[in-house]
Length: 337
Image (cartoon, rainbow, N blue to C red; front, top):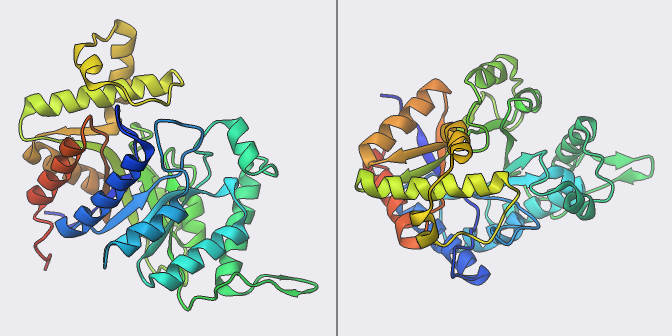
């Protein structure tokens, strides 16, 4: 059986009837539990202009998460680099690495994590081009290695930490796999965004990978929405909530989180059922043994070193239970020899 690690991606969802403060508190509690359950890393996302998701500043939230845990890796999944100055990202993550050396991940993406207008307000100089994204990545490496400068002298990203965060490139369509390979970074494949992404994305990444100071060999994470329950009936109810949320996303509705009772009674029409089938590749759901089988297949198909699960649920209890059941199914607390 293939051995791989398991991590968690958290979006700090503001569930129906809860507050933003409660959503952040739940993320904090989940990070602590993830460490106890044996998960290898805990990432938080960057989204903007959404009342549905409270996670807009992963670099700030990561301080809290790393502080309440002791050894689990804490990271961004991801920093949407075009929304930011490369120098400021380097400073933020050098500070994190100084505070929590050897535990910080910098996952980066080129999508805005929001609508185009909001992204332009976040960074008015953003031209949304791949050339600019690549230039930011190049600048970031110079800032991390103290080799940035102009004709007037060096420009230092402070504090000058002795180590740099582990860097990952996020990819949903495969277009960024060559970018990850070119910079010698890890590749995190977001199947929870694109259910049709194929293993050849990883094959191309590994074929073109160039070893770097931080990574000698290619490293892959595959991620999916994952819902686990003790019975098929309960798993089906959790799946219906996720299906409903994705349908709403496609309508451009990013909040508030739906009332669970409304979703239970809701009857999908033919068009919505077609979209649910279309999105089915983004979600893994079922009882523990079924979920274990599906996640293992993902790891094998994508030659992944790690599977990252993301779980939206109607209650905090159901969400936590899902993580617990997955941990038990994989014996995460037991050391892998």
